[in-house]
Length: 421
Image (cartoon, rainbow, N blue to C red; front, side, top):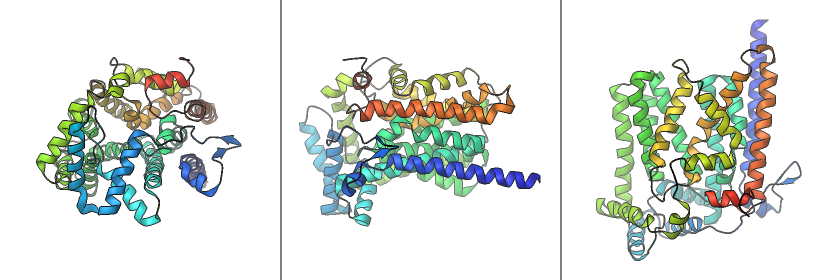
């Protein structure tokens, strides 16, 4: 009888999770899917297509790089990088470099497979990886806290405003969030199950993929090293020589591949030197990318106020026994310290990789509310999560559907929320 109840419960959990994921996938379908088919992107009769329908500055550059790759082939990548160096040297401000290879290459593969136009291929790649991030978040949470956590995090991630926003535009940050979250999960698995070569190799590949995606990989690698260092006191698992070797070798592999793609070490170094030097001179970055160390907290409070408050509540309940919460909090804190110190380089798009950790901490705050009332735990959690999801989805609707939001900068967030008129 007990075995039957357990089987029934497992089946119910799987069905609920599948339902949540199906709804989340629908919400992440890119606009071109609906526009090409003549359908209205709507949910329960509510129009939810993003109000911003133009091609953004970054999107136009990604489209340009993808067009060049389609026309000339992969062997032209060194020429593309040299063209970037020539153009960037003459510009007063920074433009994104073609060494953000993996996102462009993924869109290139999508174009080859399905014949999508360059901009549509970039949008589709962003949407697909947003879906994969959702699935990965559910699996990671399930591994950390069981079925209840997996379902709860899937529901909260399904309507996360920044995740939905990234899925609707040809931007790299949602794509990057997938690889960051994958690296974070695989590091956890390696700490818990040391010296398993499939896990070690997968972790190394994920770190290499991060480097091939965006220069923000530096923040993830720094956070990973902090997690390994603090493991001595926080005891997440076992740090082995093999794990330390892979943590170094993975990013180095990514750098070596970038060297070949860029046409040499000098080209790669020059590319990043120009990006860093010109970024601090870009008028838009000066106008919107600066602020105090708590800038990200302000932006998160504007976009997901309930999630941030609940996550803070969970932080104040941390103790040495809560390994999963400590692990995720340490990752966010370490990467936050690095990211908030980049002058003229703060944007909430870069914080997409914190979405799952923050929602895991927030969910555990909700769990704590019902610790003393186990009889009402499941129904209480279900109602609470549904309430938070409704607020989160309303935030997305206000920010991206009612207002033509593109960049996740404080000024635009304040205007979307009608704090600034």
